[in-house]
Length: 129
Image (cartoon, rainbow, N blue to C red; front, top):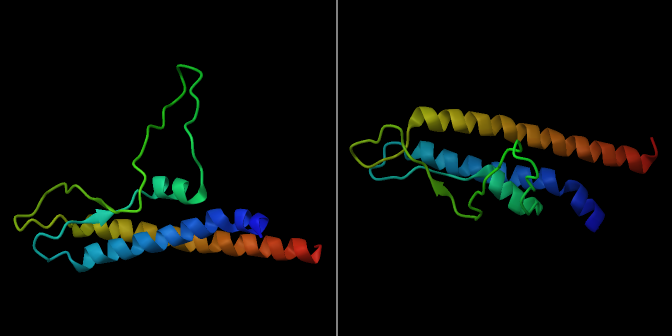
């Protein structure tokens, strides 16, 4: 089953992380009026790399190569820095959270579609079509 796992792992990991991020962003929106609540988020790119098993640094063999830098990897959510902090200590900026939530929802649906396409392709290959 490792071949099948490797075949589906990227989409499954993306779907799982998008779901986790949707929960965090939903919590941020729900606590927009809670004093001293700190808005959180995850670094999707680094979490995805860790989940899929993409590791190592890219070699920059030419001065013109762009450096990707290093991102902190971990399963903990990061705290978002507010653009305009509130007086009650709450760092949720509702407009930012709503945009992030909407974007994540669209990407979640895309991940579902990619997973469905992979399954459709696998089914087609098994049938010999």
